[in-house]
Image (tube, rainbow, N blue to C red; front, top):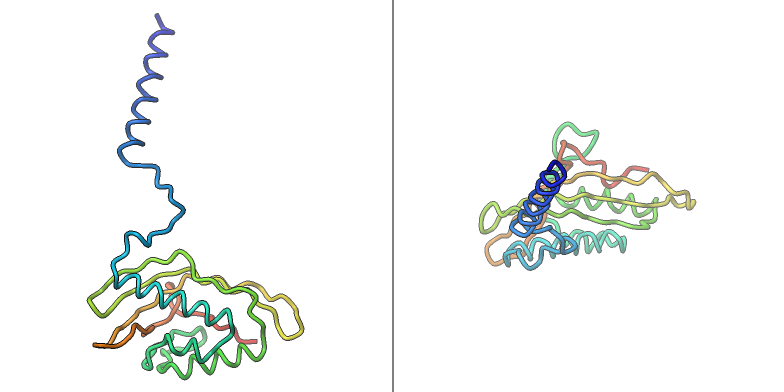
Length: 174
C-alpha cells in the first residue's frame, strides 16, 4: 500500500510540474527579443548596436554620431558630470591612440521607454583591449546606464552615459 501511495504522489508531482511548465513556458528562444520590441525600442537598440560597432572599429567620429551634443558623462574620478559629446570623444581618441580594441560588446540590453522621445537602457559593457605594446590589459566590464533622447524630427542620441552604480571607467585611461 505504501508503494502505491509513493507512486501516486510522484505521479501527481510530475503532473503538476509538467502542467506548470506548459502554462508558464520554459523561456527558451535564445534571448532575441526583437519580436517583442516596439518600433521606438528597436530604434534605440539600433543606436546601441551602432555605438558598439563604432567602438569596435575604433572610429571616434562614428561614435560621436550616436551621441547627443549635450551628453552628460558620469566619469570615474570626476565629482561633477562632464557635459558635451566632445569631451567624451576626446577621451575616446586618447584611448584609441594608446590601445587596440580586440572586442567591445554591449550585452544584456534592456530598454525602457520613458516617453515618446526619451528612453533608458541598461547594458553590460565588456571591453577587451591591448596597449600599443600588444600587452593584454584587464577586461573592463561594467553595468552601464544610458539615457537616450530624440529631438522632434531627429534621430536618437545618447544623452547620459554612466555606470549603474554611478561613474564609468570607460574609456580607460592608459
